[in-house]
Length: 242
Image 1 (cartoon, helix red, strand yellow):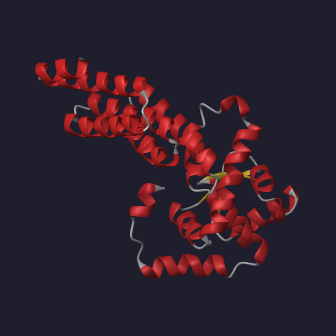
Image 2: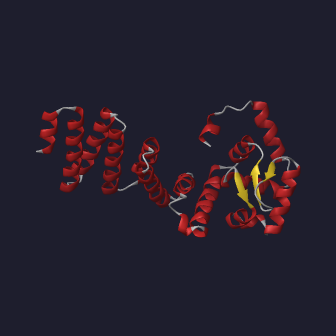
Image 3: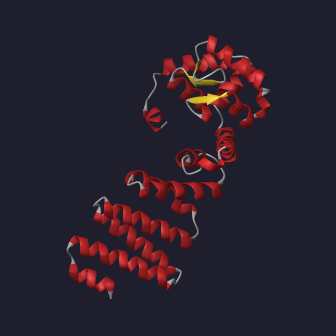
């Protein structure tokens, strides 16, 4: 999705795809638009659960067969599974919808994932974080950006961890924001970006001091001491440790 967003489509291609979608009858047009929010691959039951307004599974299946004959989607695994034939078609279809409608659908897709696969939340953290980030559900954004960031950190996907946690931080209250900001500093220290790590730790320290939280202050000073030790600045490390 990020890679697609970086592609500048020729205006003629964009217009061609958009005109093909816009000239569809209403029911198949709504179906392909909802599908574009779910992702490159999608299936009939998910479409019906996410947006029951599309009709029954039989009706949605019929719409998708129509879209398939027009070469907009292709069959995937089994009768009920499909994918966008071209990623660009998904992107243009997605961008043609109002922001508020897309945000509502992203929340529904994420909620469907939580509801239908409750035992696979950890496996779906990236998907959940992505969909909730594009929704207007601030509470779920907080929860899943932090969980996805901490999971990425545990798996040494450090750049991904920083991305998730940086997006989460402004949404959090101060105690949680301090904790997450300190984690960002730790990841930057692991990456060897010591100036950025120090800046982040100092910002975390300001948060802790502003809200007079002695334990948070002490933990952040410990992080600064450890960072100074790694840099070979033992005098600074000693000062922070004291």
